[in-house]
Image (cartoon, rainbow, N blue to C red):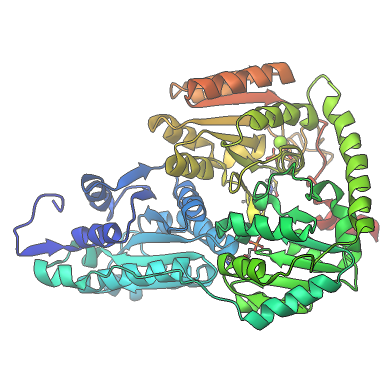
Length: 569
Ligand code: ADP
Ligand code: TZD
Ligand code: MG
């Protein structure tokens, strides 16, 4: 057994992995146990690392990824060989896509057999399989390289644009014994793995000049800005310049959504009319229509602040690139600004205010209607009000309509509190993100889930209950993917592809694990169930009946649905 005390002169790969992680400040591992890593999990626990055991590796990986996003330390996911490894890969690839620092460590089978495809237990060439989906993929082939392997993985995960890293540990390596002194010497404590990247002062001047000439400037804050934890410098720059800002989904709360410079309620106006747009930790990807098309002014000029030089000019010409880390960069901007140098025109601020007021009033009418059964507006109004009272709670949000309406309606008041489907629009992050956020923060988490979205990681409610985590899940039950009223017109008796079971009692699921289930059908009931659940601090699931006709196909992404394009032609 590796967790028995070894004689003073000999240690093994299991101990070395745990020592290497501990030496680098890793305090939590998320995983699923099995051959060959079960004893690694046991030993980590015995050595004071918290081990959170999941029901599926994808959720363990999602928990690791979000803990990386929240803490700037790589989240660690531990998986078994081949199928367990592959189950974790969606989360690792998602971490890479979103720029979250994460390391998936997997045991692997006998290399000699794997490479000759001789049929080992859980045989797969994992390191090479991981490569296309990760920022880096390493294999440790000698026990004395474990320290170096862990160090390289940490550097790769957190430096520059963070991402997912795969670290392959062969069964031979973790089981190998080696001399204790040599082992100790082989460990590496990483120094400054995410070094500051100071921007060129000329790039700051170039950007300020462009912004100073602007009539209608706009700042777009992305989740890179939230990740950077440079909240004060960002706020200072935004407030000193008076430039209106638009938060991307996970940057909501970086400045509070009720901030007077927020242009979120005038999004279409500011995108179409801004003459200079400053991107801070946001990519011009599909979430911003690649900076092109009818949403955007073709003559707008761009400032882009990003740590990744290759992001510049990826979709549209960037007139003033500023390559650096956001903390150093925003401080440099604040120091370089002269009083009154950047001043958006009053007409621009007034136009935004007018547009905002119009949209806020239109939204208020919808939010205040009380339809029976509930729709997304009335249900989300109830949740929004609870968040207004408890701004330090985390919100996890996934689904289609549930996501899109949730983003528009639930105001965030603090940075890094909104966690959602992100860059890939992936379903299945819900319970993993909720668990990761609860574990690293100890704060309550409310996961607002479409009924389809919840199904992807729903079994993790057992994990939530087993670890007594303060997670409240609200399932928006409209009986389907997007909607619950679709009819199969093919002539077969099967349900339509988007339909899920009508009136499913998701609340009963959590009762199987001694959590508390609620079934609510109106906003009052939802408010009460949510406040009671939060007050109890116990895991709860609120099954919230929503009008099955309330959503729209593809949520707010109808334009990306090929069928919509076909119909338009
Ligand atoms: P969003 O989805 O919110 O628009 P993206 O994930 O598309 O945000 O973009 C985040 C950007 O932030 C990435 O291009 C990434 O390179 C950048 N980034 C991440 N961390 C930092 C940092 N510390 N400093 C500067 N840029 C960063
Ligand atoms: N699989 C994965 C991994 N990600 C996806 N995004 C999808 C499938 C496709 N998909 C969406 O893009 S949204 C969604 C799916 C299956 C679920 C929407 O239904 P919901 O939300 O019940 O979660 P609403 O509120 O009913 O729209
Ligand atoms: Mg649904």
